[in-house]
Amino acid sequence: MANTSANTYHRPAWIEIDLQQLATNFDLINCDKADALDLLAMVKDQAYGHGAYRCAEIALEKGVKMLGVVTLSEAVELRDKGITAPILLFGEHLEDQFAFCLAHKLTIFINHPQQAQLYAQHARKFDTVPDVHIEVDSGMGRYGVRWTEAVGTIVEILGTPGIRVKGIMTHFARSDELDKSYANEQLQRFQTVLTALEEKGITFPLVHTCNSGGLLDLPRAHFDMVRIGILPLGVYPSQVCRRIEGIRPIMSVKAKIVALQHLQPGDKVGYGMRYTASSPRIIGVIPLGYGDGYPRVRNTGYVLLHGKRAPIVGGNAMDAMMVDVTDIPQTQIGDELVLLGKMGNETISVHDLAHLKGTVSYEVLTNWSWRLPRVYLRGKLGRV
Ligand SMILES: Cc1ncc(COP(=O)(O)O)c(C=O)c1O
Image (cartoon, rainbow, N blue to C red; front, side, top):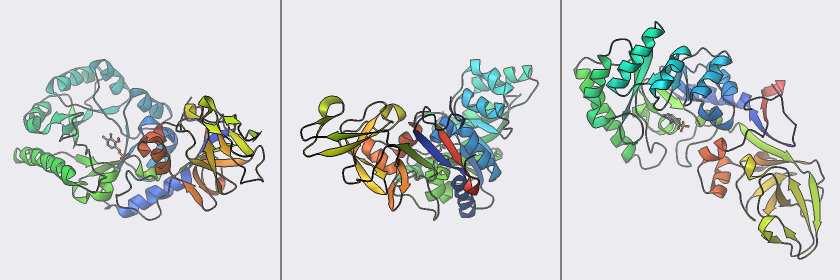
């Protein structure tokens, strides 16, 4: 089960989430942005593996106006835990999901006139006029009404009685790269749609386009609200986007050494015999593997132990990985180590693990399995 600290320490491998730093990150973002700019906290996929409810609580405490998720069960988990703030359900939703969305007071996207009519019909049964948003596809090629057809379609949607269009948005494909030409083109397309609608007297209470990359680097595109997922978690969407001083990661992955093996020259380590000891070596065994979301690497990468780097040897297994601790002779069974985060002067960042895995930081964060217990920390209060 996701998101409970009840099973903490049932295994000597866990994830720590620093809620105090999450709060600080929101404070720093609030100081950085214009006062009138609202925030939506994107807490889909358990707030990128951090735990949606715990992160949402802090986000709301820090003035976030809306929460964003993608699946109905993500939204219902938040509602069941008592969150009454507006929840925007991203993506496209099918008719068989409409009653559920209405029952849980979720705000969905309506991008086609026919969908608008169906949603309004369902809403009548609930005796409500629900808020909806419209997504304009300005070049992402994913959800929404294509910018070239948006004006006519939106006018039709607006003509549907029984729904209230509260917001309009688009989504950037390349907001966090140095080359902003495509983001600017998308913005131009979206702006053209807004202007054409404005000429017809149509405006929207809430216009939103930016993710974290856009918040940092596309001030012209902020409009009324920005939708941020990765930045409050202390991770930048890319290596090249603007920095906000003081923002730091809130996730650390830790484990304990559970066994030590004393190898003789010629001995092997792990599946596929990928490592052969060339001299007597001491190998520390860590009870966490690719099944927990650690990259399935062979003889690459390291963990932090006693403030030093212990290199990974052999191929990582589903539930275990091995590190060479020969040069850290004080190592004992039960010693704590860091797989992601800081120890002493050393740090292993999400970007380091993404590099190891040949992927992006988003995938590293969301790929940690929920069989790794999450331990929530809040300042001096310690665990919560
Ligand atoms: C539509 C939309 N808006 C905002 C975000 C948040 O992006 P980020 O985590 O880069 O802030 C996402 C995430 O994928 C998204 O799909």
